[in-house]
Length: 231
Length: 80
Image (cartoon, rainbow over all chains, first blue to last red; front, side):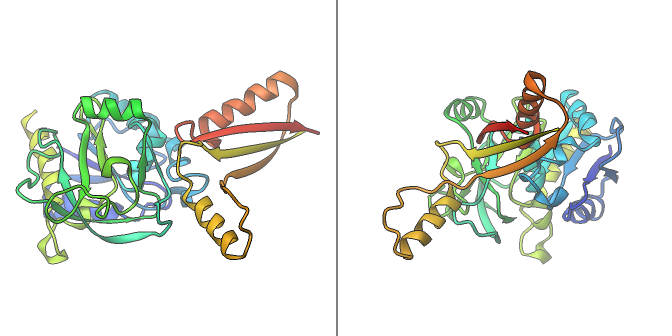
């Protein structure tokens, strides 16, 4: 089993993801440079948070055309696992590996704080080990995290059980007050149709040790590790 | 050499949070006739080529990179 964490110019959560995988979950992990073109040795690839290419033009718009992205698309098409966190989610939407788009937060502010998330589908490769008895507490840190999608896309997401996480209150209700950024239907994370690709705005790598206030994010990595180990 | 001006706007169905703030600021300055503000992007490009080939190339640039068709519309003008 091997994980890879992509480094684009401007990635800044790459070390956190690498550390959590190597030192907290004890799985082999390597960095993948944005100019690399062969990622066939990896079972799961992380597109980390940050401000790839300075967020110029639109978040994720330039990273989508980084040399490594063709091989990452092929990786996803082979059914291997791919998770985009925050800026990584934005890159996945720009690359059309996930539907919809992430636009400026409704309140225009950059928001960095803990949020509650409800696991909407506990049967995905990313959520079988995630806690479901209460909402997850995982931080967000973004200025462009408002998820938008047209009605047809939302219907497809619903029909396929592809809405994986929703922002909610401490009791697990996805209220408008608990929606930090204006995302349609409080959507915080979605998967592709075959569930091997996940995008989420909250940062599970920042919530993987109790020392940091919450280890609720750890279950997301633990789930996919278990799935890879089984296959 | 052609000068191409590209105008990118958020689709009308999307809330433009920036536009709304600008509209409120204008209202607070006393411009109470402002019914709506939408903030977009404007790009100028100098590039070789002309005619339909050039227009086709610019449209392709817009579709692939300059605009995100999921959330944005674009139009462009080709000049000298």
